[in-house]
Length: 342
Image (cartoon, rainbow, N blue to C red):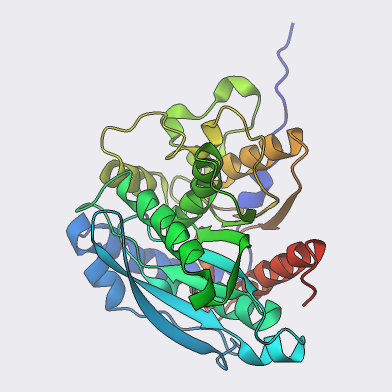
């Protein structure tokens, strides 16, 4: 008797998009050199290659910086984006605006505000939301749970200083990409567990959601992408495991590192997950979306077939601008459902 196997729903998403093919060889050579560096040099290398924003990225915003203390006295920088003209046009000048709190990507080891510049600018421009990006501490010098604690402390500071920021502490959206997406998924869980109110949405762009060692293979979720995309551009299997080992060397199934494993998703907010088809993380992201849907939590999933993790750092791709605009459009839709009509 022949054995039948369940067809894979998502494997086709790894077929290379024709727009990526001309870029792939150069990209792979560049990142091969990068990933061969010692972890301690990732941030230095990152800063030596500043990102370029796509043409049309909104630049007419009020941008300021604020230094804040974390629980241990460490001082960190916030980058704050505001669109005073939008608020004026909405007839809301002087009113408290929603807050989007952003954790940047970079494998918990590198990066800064610049990684999320596009999402921050488009969202502030299109919605009137006050967008705050957090420069949290990085591995390998600082390890789990330092990064997520820094992000949580930023939430607490923003709420305590709502009048200074001009925000409504009951209208907060978490946001991040990659490792920052991990933290943006963890924060609503942590806040729920500590009865910290005010988070109304989570915007998760290519988020890291579960160490492959702990993926719940017994739950019926498809999990093929980590192997299928093990040699993918920008981020492959070895690179992701390296990020995990530097962030959480003695990794365990802690839900504040692996939000997919949280026992209950009850009380978590409406969610947008943007997924790249060639990403090793693809299937854990679909699994998280399924968990939320099973609990009747509103979830929107946007997929970029044939593109790798982090494709949005390439400004020449039309998909990059689409990725930024979809983020802002989802925030606008969510806020409209809460009575903030931009």
